[in-house]
Length: 177
Image 1 (cartoon, rainbow, N blue to C red):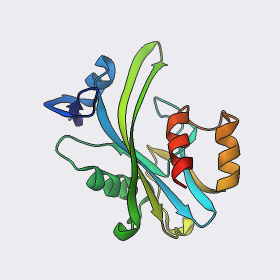
Image 2 (image 1 turned 30 degrees about the vertical axis):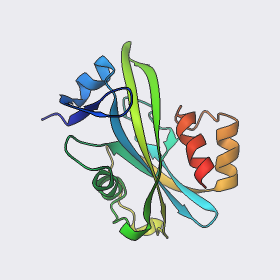
Image 3 (image 1 turned 180 degrees about the vertical axis):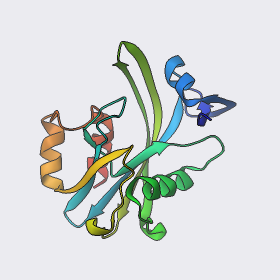
């Protein structure tokens, strides 16, 4: 069964309506997502999206991310995505919501227009991650890697094509680091 999402208005207010994820993206409805970045000292953990993903296959992005399902809280979604994609538990006392912002985008995948009208809850988790203990969700993540924050910042500023095309996300993150 397809994941159901809560529909928001253009100001981020819940409308009380729910829709299937694919229909939300076809019709351009506003909805919420979580983006989690693990920071370890002067390094940031990025994930490379699986090569079979519909959008941004093989591109580098947040440590973990995902949609907030209908009726789910942002924090619960962040914990769940962290566990699902990385196979490790987020240290709850170190997982902090640092920003919420509006992030509209339009993409074309295989000739089909996809509307990503997101309200993003941005989390930072300052914890030590042992990459030997990470168990990646193969259908979502190809690999993870720590980057020096200074190198990541250079990649963002140069609009490095290895990164997902989400400059607003990366700019909000860099402002919070």
